[in-house]
Amino acid sequence: MNQTERKIQSEERRRKSDEAQRFLEDRMQLLDTIREMIDIEFERRGVKTESNPHPENPPPEGTGREPPDRKPPPPLPLATAHGYLHKRPIIIM
Image (tube, rainbow, N blue to C red):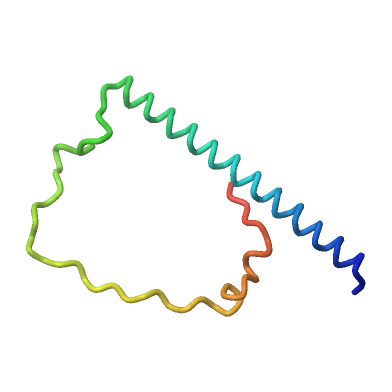
């Protein structure tokens, strides 16, 4: 592979990465807009978002039990550890 081909591949990777980044930013902006719409609707209805949303079913008081010990997650598959799965953008619809 000569230098020109490497440069073309590098530019193609950069272009795809930029597209994926723009897509991600658009989705994050959409999520923020939806959150704002929900907050406005809660405000319109007079619902307090900081308090317990289900006062008829409050969370249990302290039971004296401790949560179970958590095991560390298993090691990543080799393909993930080497970034193979990150070479293609993930499209979330």
